[in-house]
Amino acid sequence: MKIDFADLLRQLGAKAEREGLRRHGRVETILVRPDGSTLVRVRDNLIVDTGFDFIADAIGKASGRPDVMSHIAVGTGTNAAAAGNTGLQTEIARKAATYSHTAGTKVFVFDATFNPGEATGAITEAGVINAASSGTLLDRVVFAVINKGADDTLTQRFTFTMS
Image (cartoon, rainbow, N blue to C red; front, side):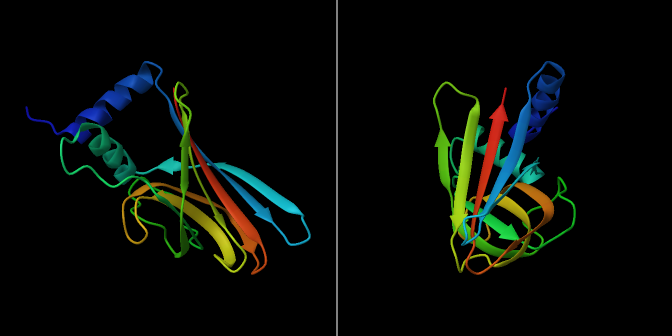
């Protein structure tokens, strides 16, 4: 029986879950209004199928590896996050993200800040993507509306833990 690397990783992932390997993603949303008041929300996110394929290809492909995850997108879509998602439902803005990881830890983070005048609207979804436009979606999260005014600042911080 022939099996490709992505399928092998999925099978190993299922086995690893039974044996204690855990993957967890969450997003922290921080909205700061001009008066200094702050709204903070935390929600678990879903690593989508294309995200797992991306991870497999980044680890195993000898050539043709995908571009690194580099951007965070926000939108106004309200459909529940699903494994088959390949993008946000209704993206309104995308911004370059900062990646961070401390060697020896099992956590890595992507974050981006949408400044006043950027991503204004009723934000209800977000995700990490590997391109300034189009690209591969790593994860998606849908949450209760956060109304970002034109003078507000919105930070999206995606934290991934593998243990």
